[in-house]
Amino acid sequence: MGVHLLLGLLVVASQPSETVDPQLDPVAATNEQPIIVTGEAEESEKGQRTVVVGSRIARKPVLEASGIASNIPVAAFSATSGVDPLSVENRVIKSKVSQCRSDNPAIGKEAACLLFDADVALQRQERATAISFYRNLNASTEFSPAERLVAAEKLFSLGQNMADAHLREEALLRMLATMAMPAGEAQSARRSLVTLAIQRRNPALAIVRLREVVDHDTNDAQSFANLAVLLRQEGLAGSSDSMKKAIQIKQERGETIPAGWTDFVGGES
Image 1: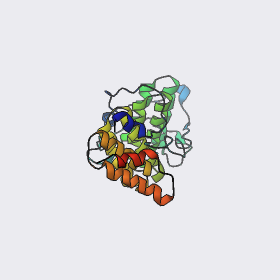
Image 2: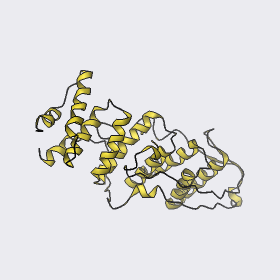
Image 3: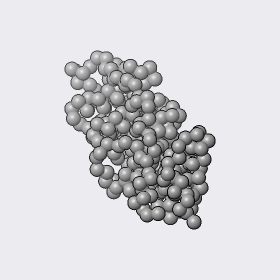
Image 4: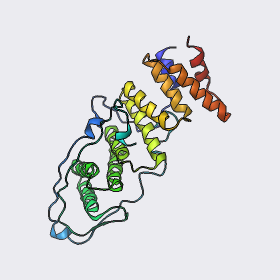
């Protein structure tokens, strides 16, 4: 079975159409340690400042998951997954402005101030500054998991708005590292990370991330099939077993089995 046919069996999630530079490394970006200093507010900005957190990025998968897709904490990935545990312990130099609040009761005053400052930076078209605020809030253990998650979600949304696949990938890793994501969203994020690894033309990382996906959902037929395809493409063992597992899941559900899946197993000696 040729490589082109193998790749044809892959079902990937819908992704924005931006070009992905495989040389950039969003995993390494999760270890950046931005230092942010916020000073006394200008007179025109004094008084109560409110940051609107709103709902999470979406109450559905981060990316529509129809196959290899991808909404765990980085620390929960295996050592070979391409994800280093986020060990950053930045101490934030707090803003001196005393009146900040969020529409989300889980967000404290200090976190709200940083989120507000990031919003102001975005209004001024200072995206790099806003990104530093989000990274700092997310990386600092001084903040609660819920606060760190909101910062990563903001980073993800900014990555979407900028059509920046690397920033989205970094944000997903940061979101999962908080261990504060609902289980369904966390699994969707794992699938999204698989897709992003494929887009970066890193099949080895995609395979490791796919193993994480099926470890957390042993009834994910499409992910087992995708894993089978990538294993065979890379000349690794276990492709037939993975595809047989995908077929078994479909059979137990009484669902139609794609012809390509049965051909895949039948064509292996």
